[in-house]
Length: 413
Image (cartoon, rainbow, N blue to C red; front, side, top):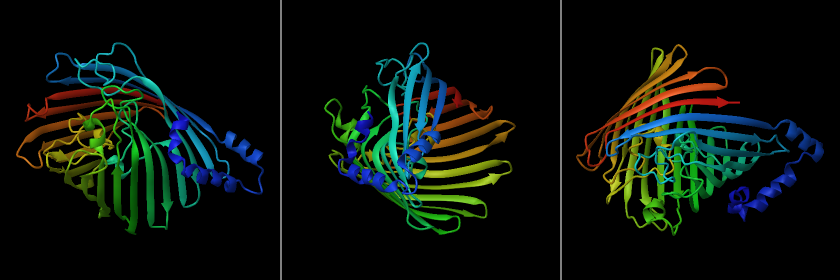
């Protein structure tokens, strides 16, 4: 699996190995540096148990999943400027499997996209200098708070990328983040089910940020997603997800008010059978309200020629409602107006959010959603979470009423 993660660099690997030759300090022997790297290495254990229930109109019975994700992470110390990380994930069902994992074939239940399996979640080598970081292998990539490129951490099997990633701080106020990706390891893996476990292709992500004043940032980005055909899956699940997304963003603080504005456009690319060019924009504001934080936003994912602006690699769960009704943008687009309130009550971190969902290019009112969460950091290594989402439809022919609830315990050692 690790060798698969390195296959992307038939051209890049010689360059990367060349770094090894120049990174070892001349005044310290290689054996001493290896000894130091071993002593500075770490092993971490992350256990996340979660009970999830999904009650969705159209199904006779709700889905119920009792799942444990076990994650072991080994991170080496540095040999000169080089370090490495290996992370293994295992997802297991504890008890009955009364849910559709997208791989177990239990389509009589609503979907909980957490198939069982074991895989190398991350496996990378990294070169770190004062202003440059180069990472090669299977890795997590998170850009723009996961709105377009993310790791989907809510699912038990996170999304990772076989990639060469360069992060360069060109100056104190200007940086470039560029990735060349040959495979996306998706949440539906590690084995194919009703969806591909992996997307192959030649994708490029470029993000440039400029801090033009204290507390004010301007960003430009280009996310070029290429998905190759797979004989076992339709174009809708493979090549039609290929797209080019270009955009700009601004974030800043005015007298305690945090503002985010983002504008983008997306078009079909590669071998996609689609033909569209759809817009995207968001304006988001956040301000303190006593001991709480109040946020409000208006986000629009447009549509063209019956195709909505897609966010195929995004952390979708955290952006358009925890009921996950709009992970795929509808063909008439979507307008999402939402407000949230978050803060602490004693040891509990509380969050409440309300969404209003409407079509962008038609008069359809999709419905509304209420999301609630309480999280308790019991101690340095144990966290408990209770969470719920209620989506009430106004378009039952498009989206059914859905209720979801979660109880989770996470141990980090």
